[in-house]
Image (tube, rainbow, N blue to C red; front, top):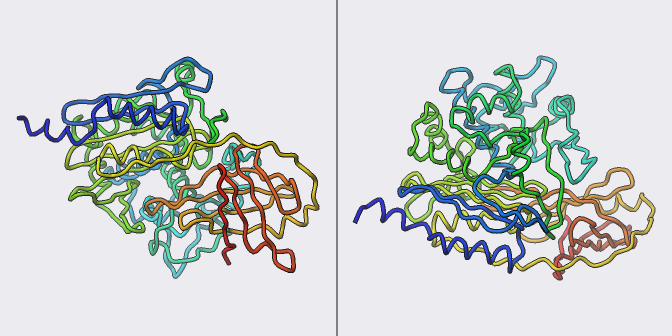
Length: 458
Protein backbone atom coordinates (compact mmCIF):
# COMPACT_ATOMS: atom_id res chain seq x y z
CA UNK A 1 0.00 0.00 0.00
CA UNK A 2 1.15 3.52 -0.75
CA UNK A 3 2.64 5.03 2.47
CA UNK A 4 0.96 8.35 1.65
CA UNK A 5 -2.44 6.66 1.89
CA UNK A 6 -1.49 5.37 5.31
CA UNK A 7 -0.78 8.96 6.32
CA UNK A 8 -4.15 10.17 5.05
CA UNK A 9 -5.98 7.61 7.19
CA UNK A 10 -5.03 9.59 10.31
CA UNK A 11 -7.78 12.08 9.39
CA UNK A 12 -11.35 10.90 10.08
CA UNK A 13 -13.42 10.16 6.99
CA UNK A 14 -15.93 12.51 5.43
CA UNK A 15 -18.95 10.68 6.89
CA UNK A 16 -17.47 10.85 10.40
CA UNK A 17 -16.73 14.57 10.01
CA UNK A 18 -20.31 15.17 8.87
CA UNK A 19 -21.63 13.28 11.92
CA UNK A 20 -19.56 15.57 14.18
CA UNK A 21 -21.05 18.65 12.50
CA UNK A 22 -24.62 17.33 12.64
CA UNK A 23 -24.28 16.70 16.38
CA UNK A 24 -22.62 20.06 17.05
CA UNK A 25 -25.36 21.97 15.18
CA UNK A 26 -28.59 19.97 15.55
CA UNK A 27 -28.13 18.53 19.05
CA UNK A 28 -25.65 20.77 20.87
CA UNK A 29 -26.91 23.99 19.17
CA UNK A 30 -23.40 25.47 19.00
CA UNK A 31 -23.68 26.95 15.50
CA UNK A 32 -26.06 27.52 12.62
CA UNK A 33 -23.52 26.28 10.09
CA UNK A 34 -19.96 24.89 10.06
CA UNK A 35 -17.58 24.24 7.18
CA UNK A 36 -14.57 21.93 7.55
CA UNK A 37 -11.71 21.81 5.06
CA UNK A 38 -9.02 19.11 5.02
CA UNK A 39 -5.81 19.03 3.00
CA UNK A 40 -3.83 15.76 3.03
CA UNK A 41 -1.52 13.72 0.77
CA UNK A 42 -4.52 12.32 -1.12
CA UNK A 43 -5.92 15.78 -1.88
CA UNK A 44 -8.31 18.29 -0.36
CA UNK A 45 -11.95 17.97 0.67
CA UNK A 46 -14.64 20.16 2.16
CA UNK A 47 -17.44 19.01 4.48
CA UNK A 48 -20.22 21.50 5.21
CA UNK A 49 -23.41 21.33 7.24
CA UNK A 50 -25.99 23.92 8.20
CA UNK A 51 -27.16 27.25 6.81
CA UNK A 52 -25.91 30.76 6.14
CA UNK A 53 -28.28 32.12 8.82
CA UNK A 54 -31.11 31.06 11.09
CA UNK A 55 -34.20 30.76 8.93
CA UNK A 56 -32.19 31.04 5.69
CA UNK A 57 -32.62 27.95 3.48
CA UNK A 58 -29.27 28.49 1.74
CA UNK A 59 -26.63 25.93 2.71
CA UNK A 60 -22.90 26.46 3.23
CA UNK A 61 -20.04 25.30 1.05
CA UNK A 62 -16.31 25.80 0.60
CA UNK A 63 -16.84 29.28 -0.87
CA UNK A 64 -18.96 30.65 1.99
CA UNK A 65 -17.29 33.69 3.59
CA UNK A 66 -16.69 33.84 7.37
CA UNK A 67 -14.97 36.24 9.72
CA UNK A 68 -11.80 34.39 10.79
CA UNK A 69 -10.99 36.62 13.78
CA UNK A 70 -7.58 36.04 15.33
CA UNK A 71 -6.48 33.62 12.61
CA UNK A 72 -5.72 36.99 10.98
CA UNK A 73 -2.67 37.17 13.27
CA UNK A 74 -1.08 34.31 11.31
CA UNK A 75 -1.38 36.39 8.14
CA UNK A 76 0.12 39.38 9.97
CA UNK A 77 3.09 37.32 11.15
CA UNK A 78 3.56 35.84 7.67
CA UNK A 79 3.83 39.39 6.32
CA UNK A 80 6.45 40.00 9.02
CA UNK A 81 8.41 36.87 8.04
CA UNK A 82 8.23 37.86 4.37
CA UNK A 83 9.46 41.40 5.08
CA UNK A 84 12.32 39.93 7.13
CA UNK A 85 13.29 37.65 4.23
CA UNK A 86 13.33 40.69 1.95
CA UNK A 87 15.47 42.55 4.51
CA UNK A 88 12.86 45.28 4.80
CA UNK A 89 12.63 44.79 8.58
CA UNK A 90 14.37 42.65 11.21
CA UNK A 91 12.76 40.64 14.01
CA UNK A 92 14.74 42.55 16.63
CA UNK A 93 13.79 45.96 15.23
CA UNK A 94 12.20 48.14 17.93
CA UNK A 95 8.52 48.77 17.27
CA UNK A 96 9.23 52.47 17.81
CA UNK A 97 11.28 52.46 14.58
CA UNK A 98 8.05 52.25 12.58
CA UNK A 99 6.00 54.84 14.45
CA UNK A 100 5.86 58.63 14.06
CA UNK A 101 8.47 60.41 16.17
CA UNK A 102 5.81 62.01 18.37
CA UNK A 103 4.59 58.57 19.58
CA UNK A 104 6.37 57.34 22.70
CA UNK A 105 6.56 53.56 22.69
CA UNK A 106 6.69 52.11 26.25
CA UNK A 107 9.98 50.59 27.42
CA UNK A 108 11.19 48.92 30.61
CA UNK A 109 14.68 48.27 31.98
CA UNK A 110 16.03 50.03 28.89
CA UNK A 111 14.52 47.26 26.76
CA UNK A 112 12.40 48.11 23.74
CA UNK A 113 9.42 46.16 22.42
CA UNK A 114 10.52 44.45 19.20
CA UNK A 115 8.57 43.12 16.21
CA UNK A 116 9.37 39.61 17.47
CA UNK A 117 7.87 40.46 20.86
CA UNK A 118 4.63 41.55 19.19
CA UNK A 119 4.40 38.45 16.99
CA UNK A 120 4.99 36.09 19.95
CA UNK A 121 2.69 37.92 22.41
CA UNK A 122 5.57 38.71 24.75
CA UNK A 123 5.63 42.51 24.44
CA UNK A 124 4.22 43.25 27.90
CA UNK A 125 1.26 45.04 26.32
CA UNK A 126 -2.18 44.11 27.71
CA UNK A 127 -4.82 42.07 25.83
CA UNK A 128 -6.67 45.26 24.91
CA UNK A 129 -5.91 48.99 25.30
CA UNK A 130 -7.53 50.57 28.36
CA UNK A 131 -8.91 53.45 26.28
CA UNK A 132 -11.03 51.10 24.18
CA UNK A 133 -14.40 52.54 25.23
CA UNK A 134 -16.72 49.87 23.78
CA UNK A 135 -19.32 52.44 22.70
CA UNK A 136 -21.04 49.57 20.91
CA UNK A 137 -20.31 46.30 22.77
CA UNK A 138 -21.42 44.36 19.69
CA UNK A 139 -18.66 45.99 17.62
CA UNK A 140 -16.13 47.20 20.21
CA UNK A 141 -13.17 48.06 17.95
CA UNK A 142 -15.10 49.90 15.24
CA UNK A 143 -14.52 53.44 16.55
CA UNK A 144 -11.01 52.91 17.93
CA UNK A 145 -8.79 55.33 16.00
CA UNK A 146 -5.08 55.55 15.24
CA UNK A 147 -4.92 58.61 17.50
CA UNK A 148 -6.47 56.52 20.30
CA UNK A 149 -3.80 53.88 19.76
CA UNK A 150 -0.97 56.40 19.81
CA UNK A 151 -2.33 58.04 22.97
CA UNK A 152 -2.49 54.69 24.73
CA UNK A 153 1.05 53.70 23.76
CA UNK A 154 2.48 57.06 24.79
CA UNK A 155 0.96 56.82 28.25
CA UNK A 156 1.28 53.12 29.06
CA UNK A 157 3.70 51.69 31.64
CA UNK A 158 4.85 48.14 31.01
CA UNK A 159 4.34 45.75 33.97
CA UNK A 160 7.35 43.60 33.00
CA UNK A 161 10.30 43.56 30.62
CA UNK A 162 9.56 43.07 26.91
CA UNK A 163 10.24 39.50 25.81
CA UNK A 164 10.08 38.07 29.32
CA UNK A 165 6.61 36.52 29.48
CA UNK A 166 3.76 35.35 27.24
CA UNK A 167 0.44 37.23 27.47
CA UNK A 168 -1.95 36.99 24.55
CA UNK A 169 -2.61 40.49 23.21
CA UNK A 170 -5.04 41.63 20.54
CA UNK A 171 -3.45 45.03 20.96
CA UNK A 172 0.00 43.61 20.15
CA UNK A 173 -1.28 41.76 17.08
CA UNK A 174 -3.10 44.82 15.80
CA UNK A 175 -0.11 47.05 16.46
CA UNK A 176 2.17 44.69 14.52
CA UNK A 177 -0.08 44.94 11.47
CA UNK A 178 -0.14 48.72 11.81
CA UNK A 179 3.66 48.93 12.02
CA UNK A 180 4.24 46.70 8.99
CA UNK A 181 1.77 48.70 6.91
CA UNK A 182 3.46 51.93 8.06
CA UNK A 183 6.83 50.53 7.01
CA UNK A 184 5.44 49.52 3.60
CA UNK A 185 3.76 52.89 3.09
CA UNK A 186 0.28 51.44 2.68
CA UNK A 187 -2.71 50.20 4.68
CA UNK A 188 -3.01 46.76 6.24
CA UNK A 189 -5.60 45.40 3.83
CA UNK A 190 -3.56 46.40 0.78
CA UNK A 191 -0.40 44.99 2.36
CA UNK A 192 -2.00 41.57 2.90
CA UNK A 193 -3.50 41.56 -0.58
CA UNK A 194 -0.26 42.48 -2.38
CA UNK A 195 2.09 40.34 -0.27
CA UNK A 196 -0.09 37.29 0.44
CA UNK A 197 -3.54 36.76 -1.01
CA UNK A 198 -2.82 37.75 -4.63
CA UNK A 199 0.42 35.71 -4.89
CA UNK A 200 -1.30 32.74 -3.22
CA UNK A 201 -4.46 33.04 -5.38
CA UNK A 202 -6.83 33.62 -2.45
CA UNK A 203 -9.49 35.91 -3.98
CA UNK A 204 -11.98 35.45 -1.14
CA UNK A 205 -9.67 36.58 1.67
CA UNK A 206 -9.70 40.23 2.69
CA UNK A 207 -11.47 42.84 4.76
CA UNK A 208 -13.65 44.73 2.29
CA UNK A 209 -16.30 42.47 0.77
CA UNK A 210 -17.03 42.64 -2.95
CA UNK A 211 -20.68 42.52 -4.00
CA UNK A 212 -20.26 38.86 -4.92
CA UNK A 213 -18.59 38.06 -1.58
CA UNK A 214 -21.45 39.75 0.27
CA UNK A 215 -23.87 37.28 -1.31
CA UNK A 216 -21.76 34.40 0.03
CA UNK A 217 -21.11 35.91 3.49
CA UNK A 218 -22.50 33.86 6.36
CA UNK A 219 -24.48 35.71 9.03
CA UNK A 220 -22.81 35.69 12.44
CA UNK A 221 -24.70 34.56 15.55
CA UNK A 222 -24.13 34.92 19.29
CA UNK A 223 -24.13 32.14 21.88
CA UNK A 224 -27.94 31.76 21.78
CA UNK A 225 -27.83 31.76 17.97
CA UNK A 226 -29.35 35.21 17.53
CA UNK A 227 -27.96 37.10 14.51
CA UNK A 228 -25.34 39.79 15.12
CA UNK A 229 -23.72 42.44 12.94
CA UNK A 230 -20.29 41.99 11.38
CA UNK A 231 -17.19 43.13 13.29
CA UNK A 232 -14.88 45.96 12.25
CA UNK A 233 -11.27 46.60 13.35
CA UNK A 234 -10.07 49.58 11.30
CA UNK A 235 -7.04 50.44 13.46
CA UNK A 236 -6.18 47.02 14.89
CA UNK A 237 -6.92 45.13 11.67
CA UNK A 238 -3.85 42.92 12.04
CA UNK A 239 -5.43 41.35 15.14
CA UNK A 240 -8.59 39.99 13.55
CA UNK A 241 -10.18 41.84 10.64
CA UNK A 242 -9.87 39.31 7.81
CA UNK A 243 -12.69 37.33 6.21
CA UNK A 244 -12.07 34.16 4.25
CA UNK A 245 -13.55 30.88 2.98
CA UNK A 246 -12.64 27.27 3.62
CA UNK A 247 -11.34 26.90 0.07
CA UNK A 248 -9.08 29.93 0.41
CA UNK A 249 -7.82 28.76 3.79
CA UNK A 250 -7.04 25.32 2.32
CA UNK A 251 -4.98 27.06 -0.36
CA UNK A 252 -3.18 28.90 2.44
CA UNK A 253 -2.40 25.65 4.31
CA UNK A 254 -1.57 23.87 1.05
CA UNK A 255 1.39 26.23 0.63
CA UNK A 256 2.56 25.76 4.24
CA UNK A 257 2.53 21.99 3.68
CA UNK A 258 4.54 22.18 0.46
CA UNK A 259 1.82 20.94 -1.89
CA UNK A 260 1.98 24.24 -3.74
CA UNK A 261 5.16 26.11 -4.68
CA UNK A 262 5.42 29.76 -3.70
CA UNK A 263 8.09 32.41 -3.13
CA UNK A 264 6.54 32.70 0.35
CA UNK A 265 7.67 29.17 1.29
CA UNK A 266 10.90 30.31 3.04
CA UNK A 267 8.95 32.85 5.11
CA UNK A 268 6.39 30.19 6.02
CA UNK A 269 9.14 27.82 7.12
CA UNK A 270 10.76 30.56 9.22
CA UNK A 271 7.53 31.05 11.20
CA UNK A 272 8.15 27.79 13.10
CA UNK A 273 11.89 28.24 13.50
CA UNK A 274 11.70 31.10 16.03
CA UNK A 275 9.99 29.98 19.23
CA UNK A 276 9.18 31.24 22.68
CA UNK A 277 7.33 29.65 25.62
CA UNK A 278 3.56 30.20 25.68
CA UNK A 279 2.32 28.65 28.90
CA UNK A 280 2.56 24.88 28.51
CA UNK A 281 3.21 25.07 24.77
CA UNK A 282 5.30 27.23 22.42
CA UNK A 283 4.60 30.02 19.98
CA UNK A 284 6.40 30.73 16.74
CA UNK A 285 5.72 33.72 14.54
CA UNK A 286 1.95 33.81 14.85
CA UNK A 287 1.42 30.04 15.11
CA UNK A 288 0.85 28.27 18.45
CA UNK A 289 2.79 25.01 18.52
CA UNK A 290 2.29 21.96 20.70
CA UNK A 291 3.55 18.37 20.60
CA UNK A 292 1.22 15.42 20.15
CA UNK A 293 2.19 11.74 19.73
CA UNK A 294 5.72 12.52 18.62
CA UNK A 295 4.53 15.15 16.13
CA UNK A 296 3.87 18.87 16.30
CA UNK A 297 0.73 20.76 15.40
CA UNK A 298 0.85 24.45 14.48
CA UNK A 299 -2.50 26.14 14.92
CA UNK A 300 -4.44 29.28 15.71
CA UNK A 301 -8.05 29.94 16.51
CA UNK A 302 -10.24 32.99 16.18
CA UNK A 303 -13.45 34.47 17.46
CA UNK A 304 -15.51 37.58 16.73
CA UNK A 305 -18.96 38.57 17.95
CA UNK A 306 -20.63 36.08 15.60
CA UNK A 307 -17.98 33.63 14.39
CA UNK A 308 -15.42 31.06 15.56
CA UNK A 309 -12.55 29.71 13.46
CA UNK A 310 -9.64 27.27 13.57
CA UNK A 311 -6.70 26.66 11.25
CA UNK A 312 -3.91 24.19 11.90
CA UNK A 313 -1.46 21.84 10.25
CA UNK A 314 0.92 18.97 10.94
CA UNK A 315 4.17 19.54 9.01
CA UNK A 316 5.35 15.94 9.46
CA UNK A 317 2.16 14.20 8.34
CA UNK A 318 1.45 16.99 5.81
CA UNK A 319 -2.13 17.39 6.97
CA UNK A 320 -4.00 20.68 7.37
CA UNK A 321 -7.46 21.46 8.76
CA UNK A 322 -9.67 24.54 8.77
CA UNK A 323 -12.98 24.81 10.65
CA UNK A 324 -15.26 27.84 10.23
CA UNK A 325 -18.44 28.43 12.25
CA UNK A 326 -21.04 31.19 12.02
CA UNK A 327 -21.66 31.46 15.78
CA UNK A 328 -19.59 32.66 18.72
CA UNK A 329 -19.90 30.07 21.46
CA UNK A 330 -17.39 29.36 24.21
CA UNK A 331 -17.18 25.74 23.05
CA UNK A 332 -16.01 27.02 19.68
CA UNK A 333 -14.56 24.69 17.05
CA UNK A 334 -11.00 24.21 18.35
CA UNK A 335 -11.75 20.69 19.58
CA UNK A 336 -13.03 19.70 16.13
CA UNK A 337 -9.91 21.02 14.42
CA UNK A 338 -7.52 19.36 16.86
CA UNK A 339 -9.47 16.09 16.72
CA UNK A 340 -9.21 15.97 12.95
CA UNK A 341 -5.46 16.56 13.13
CA UNK A 342 -5.10 13.96 15.89
CA UNK A 343 -8.12 11.65 16.40
CA UNK A 344 -6.85 10.85 19.92
CA UNK A 345 -7.68 14.44 20.94
CA UNK A 346 -11.18 14.33 22.47
CA UNK A 347 -14.19 16.22 21.21
CA UNK A 348 -16.02 18.55 23.60
CA UNK A 349 -19.58 17.78 24.62
CA UNK A 350 -21.18 21.20 25.20
CA UNK A 351 -24.75 21.45 26.44
CA UNK A 352 -27.22 23.29 24.19
CA UNK A 353 -28.04 26.81 25.40
CA UNK A 354 -31.36 27.26 27.19
CA UNK A 355 -33.88 29.91 26.13
CA UNK A 356 -33.24 33.22 27.94
CA UNK A 357 -35.55 34.19 30.78
CA UNK A 358 -37.62 37.36 30.65
CA UNK A 359 -36.18 40.24 32.68
CA UNK A 360 -37.28 43.78 33.50
CA UNK A 361 -34.75 46.60 33.74
CA UNK A 362 -34.96 49.02 36.67
CA UNK A 363 -33.07 52.23 37.43
CA UNK A 364 -30.51 52.18 40.26
CA UNK A 365 -28.12 54.79 41.59
CA UNK A 366 -25.14 54.78 39.17
CA UNK A 367 -22.79 55.22 42.15
CA UNK A 368 -23.57 51.62 43.13
CA UNK A 369 -21.84 50.41 39.98
CA UNK A 370 -18.41 51.32 41.36
CA UNK A 371 -18.92 48.64 44.01
CA UNK A 372 -19.00 45.92 41.36
CA UNK A 373 -16.12 46.74 39.00
CA UNK A 374 -13.15 44.37 39.01
CA UNK A 375 -12.07 40.91 37.90
CA UNK A 376 -13.64 37.70 39.24
CA UNK A 377 -12.25 34.14 39.00
CA UNK A 378 -15.29 32.05 38.00
CA UNK A 379 -13.42 28.84 37.06
CA UNK A 380 -9.69 28.05 36.79
CA UNK A 381 -9.95 28.95 33.10
CA UNK A 382 -12.59 31.71 33.18
CA UNK A 383 -12.23 35.28 34.46
CA UNK A 384 -15.15 37.71 34.28
CA UNK A 385 -14.18 41.39 34.13
CA UNK A 386 -16.74 43.99 35.22
CA UNK A 387 -16.27 47.58 34.04
CA UNK A 388 -18.27 50.79 34.25
CA UNK A 389 -18.77 53.44 31.56
CA UNK A 390 -20.82 56.31 32.96
CA UNK A 391 -24.11 54.89 34.22
CA UNK A 392 -23.65 51.61 32.28
CA UNK A 393 -22.16 48.35 33.54
CA UNK A 394 -20.33 45.91 31.23
CA UNK A 395 -19.01 42.37 31.60
CA UNK A 396 -16.45 40.48 29.53
CA UNK A 397 -15.31 36.87 29.88
CA UNK A 398 -11.70 35.83 29.32
CA UNK A 399 -11.23 32.10 28.72
CA UNK A 400 -7.74 30.62 29.17
CA UNK A 401 -7.25 27.84 26.63
CA UNK A 402 -3.92 26.17 25.81
CA UNK A 403 -1.93 29.17 26.93
CA UNK A 404 -4.14 31.61 25.05
CA UNK A 405 -6.59 34.06 26.61
CA UNK A 406 -9.67 34.18 24.41
CA UNK A 407 -11.73 37.32 25.00
CA UNK A 408 -15.46 36.89 24.52
CA UNK A 409 -17.40 39.93 23.27
CA UNK A 410 -18.13 42.49 25.99
CA UNK A 411 -21.82 42.75 26.89
CA UNK A 412 -23.86 45.29 28.83
CA UNK A 413 -25.41 44.21 32.13
CA UNK A 414 -28.78 45.78 32.99
CA UNK A 415 -30.03 46.12 36.56
CA UNK A 416 -33.10 44.21 37.69
CA UNK A 417 -32.18 44.81 41.35
CA UNK A 418 -29.44 46.64 43.23
CA UNK A 419 -27.22 43.54 43.08
CA UNK A 420 -28.83 41.61 40.24
CA UNK A 421 -28.08 42.19 36.55
CA UNK A 422 -28.96 40.54 33.25
CA UNK A 423 -27.76 40.62 29.64
CA UNK A 424 -29.98 41.15 26.63
CA UNK A 425 -27.57 39.61 24.09
CA UNK A 426 -27.06 36.27 25.86
CA UNK A 427 -28.55 34.16 28.64
CA UNK A 428 -26.27 35.58 31.33
CA UNK A 429 -27.27 36.93 34.74
CA UNK A 430 -24.96 38.21 37.46
CA UNK A 431 -25.61 38.46 41.19
CA UNK A 432 -23.07 40.39 43.26
CA UNK A 433 -22.32 39.49 46.88
CA UNK A 434 -21.10 42.46 48.91
CA UNK A 435 -19.25 43.12 52.15
CA UNK A 436 -20.25 45.46 55.00
CA UNK A 437 -19.21 48.58 53.04
CA UNK A 438 -21.16 47.58 49.94
CA UNK A 439 -18.10 46.60 47.88
CA UNK A 440 -18.56 43.31 46.01
CA UNK A 441 -16.46 40.45 47.34
CA UNK A 442 -17.73 37.88 44.83
CA UNK A 443 -20.36 37.27 42.21
CA UNK A 444 -22.45 34.43 40.85
CA UNK A 445 -22.67 34.03 37.10
CA UNK A 446 -25.96 32.40 36.09
CA UNK A 447 -25.67 30.84 32.64
CA UNK A 448 -27.67 28.09 30.90
CA UNK A 449 -29.17 26.90 34.18
CA UNK A 450 -25.82 26.80 36.01
CA UNK A 451 -24.77 28.94 38.98
CA UNK A 452 -21.05 29.66 38.88
CA UNK A 453 -19.56 31.62 41.82
CA UNK A 454 -16.50 33.80 41.28
CA UNK A 455 -14.29 35.42 43.90
CA UNK A 456 -12.97 38.94 43.30
CA UNK A 457 -9.30 39.07 42.36
CA UNK A 458 -7.19 41.63 44.17
